[in-house]
Length: 228
Image 1 (spheres, one colour):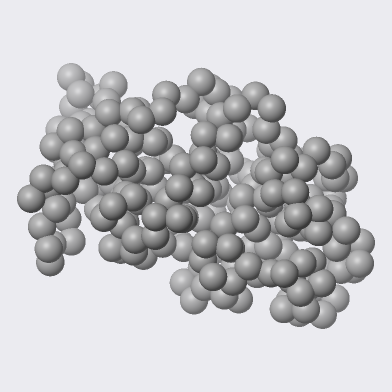
Image 2: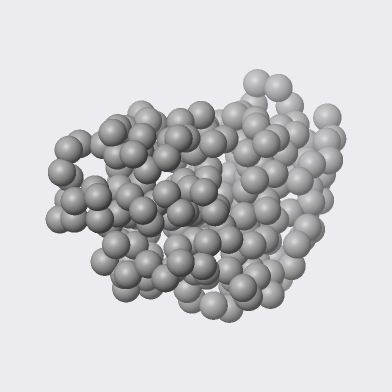
């Protein structure tokens, strides 16, 4: 059955000689895997831009119950990036976000509120005024609201983590985290680099404690090099 929906590309892998399998979180159908045939051929390679992590798409897809792989009838950009693909800092954050989402969202999982939040967050990453230094931390913290384990405040957050974890005491980080929780993406606070690094590590540990399959983030090393 053909269905129209919006989608956020999570990732893709090469499939056979010229094809890919892409995982796309759709608003109406949840997380699905799609085979895109011939996309890596010399004639179709420009279309690969549609399947880079976090690309926002309008889709017409074939959806058949009980199948693990589906096909795309039509795909076009819902939002054309102005900065993300051309800014190594933003593209690095996008890679990190895509990997995180791949560990948070399981096949067929549907959550319209989460989708809408992610769509807006991706658009914001492309805006000139976004604070890139704190964006990854704000993104992770805000997404906990839609995954069901959001902390009330920094005190509640650190109550759930091991005592005295890391090189910095919790008290040195709580005021900064409280502002990020309270102000969401609009915070303009200048947080020292070593505290941003510690906060990011703490929030990733927080995810590991709440999500069973949240394993090591391979793109974290790239992200660290960008925020340092």
